[in-house]
Length: 425
Image 1: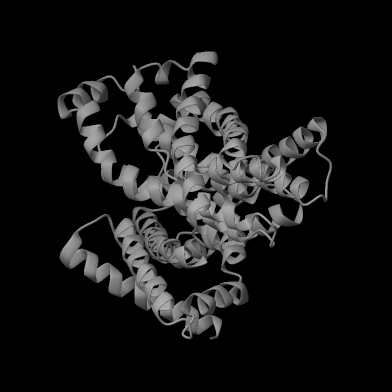
Image 2: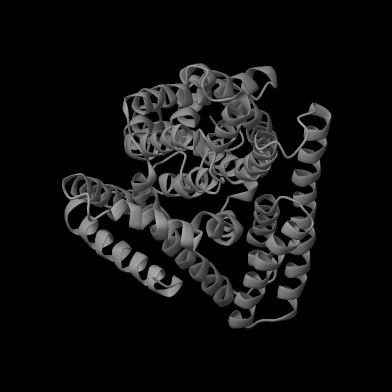
């Protein structure tokens, strides 16, 4: 099957499952597509067990390796998704909560990685070496901006808390990808595990990525001020995304962080001061379409990842332990920075509860784990990763509206919107 055939098949399945969801189930679009793909995957597994000669799972895994989809996502598609998500962030609210977002995206992500690694080491019965447990911790540390963005569109939250959730999910991806690459290098025996070396590499990639995003975003902003033709402005935005990500990769900087920073600058400055109303609408509509299309395909692939998971009793026990551990680690990694760093916006228990239960994992985690070269404990790591992702999206994602309706009733939201610069959480 050619790459074009694969894309055609994925789009066809996304359309069919989307129609079925719209007509009968009415779930959020991305979750509905993922649930449909999950149901199809279960059917494929059953068919394979009843008719071993068919081997549909083998065909899928061969196709996954041949098409190199995880690397395609991490090295290209992710850039477009992060840019699209960052364009619509409320920068005023984000600026008011910048220290909260920074603390959660850095300190919180590093804490989550270390705590999950320590816990999963014992869940695995100490069979999986510590470096690979750290790799799994980095894989599951970031909240997924695509899943989170879909969630925020459906629920009512104070503007400050929305900005914290959206900002954290955008920035902690870049932080986690850097930590993941360093941990994977250590686990594969290709680099030093010295703390000073890792810290220096982390700062270089993260801070360098942010600086690159500011530079390329500003250049694109100045270019947008020179023209007033939305087709050309769309081309400039596409060149910004692809160019920034490519340069970051060449310079060994964080591409995700660079693209997010560039997107925030364009979304805040260019749409206000460099674009006409017609151009702004056209550019925003284009990136919303890109976001929706890539979301549908990504969540479809999430559902089909079940075909790459080999289940057994020990694997199921590890998956259950991983789910419980992921929720507990998320709670601590949100609550502890809020206490230690005196983050006033998160002092209230309900703000911490929303950030904990709204910490959805998604396509980035799955793409990271599938991008790893084969290693002896790949089955255990993949099973836990997939179980956590499915639980957070299907269980936490679908119950978030219920939780928020009880924590933030409409009257409470109205009061908080009147006092936007007060207590955001």
